[in-house]
Image (cartoon, rainbow, N blue to C red):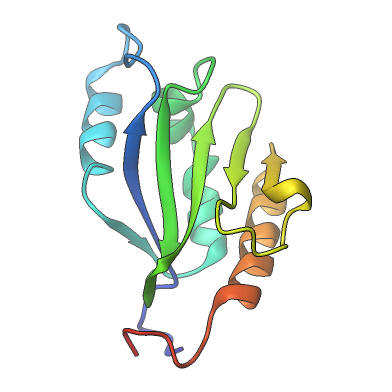
Length: 132
């Protein structure tokens, strides 16, 4: 994988509940931005975003109300579901790759999020991916 190619994508995939009524304008803009495919060059950048103040103010206000799809940039068939909640990020592996015990991982710290994303990437990434 070249240094110029992103590793991960993130996009809004589902509404679990209505968005909180008290979202500020910046948070609403972030929700709209994630309706389009966003890319990240490495696990640290993605983890930093998922644990940023801006992300927390928009998505980590209480119970999960939105679902996000996290995928490999070079193979969009390799995905995880991410459900942000106040106390943690719930990461679900619906493809049962065996990376997470019970195919679910709960994380609350940026560094553990980056580590688990790299572990997942190392298992599912292939140099022979469809988009190489």
